[in-house]
Image 1 (cartoon, rainbow, N blue to C red):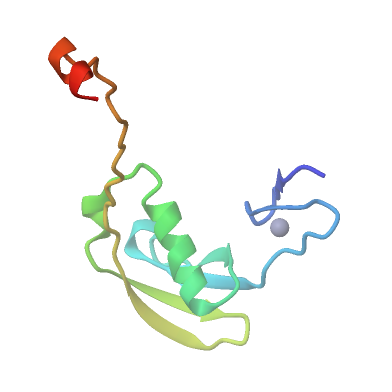
Image 2 (image 1 turned 180 degrees about the vertical axis):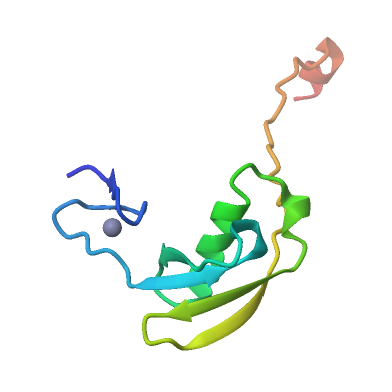
Length: 107
Ligand SMILES: [Zn+2]
């Protein structure tokens, strides 16, 4: 059974067993004074999901300790500092070179 992207919460899951995560709300100056709805599994996950939306274009410098207010459906409010970091991934590939003739004799 293939993964699908849920059109409501935008998460990838199996269509038969998918259940959208609970709703949280965030407020950030980029969206004005209105709280925005977001699906997440926890307050921390909601802050992370905010970061993904806010940083959609990969402008990591914008993610320099953004302050974000998250509110649950139960009206509990928590404030988080959100930042992002770039990660470097290294590619290693062996270069096979021919041995010079004198080295071949030694082997
Ligand atoms: Zn969903």
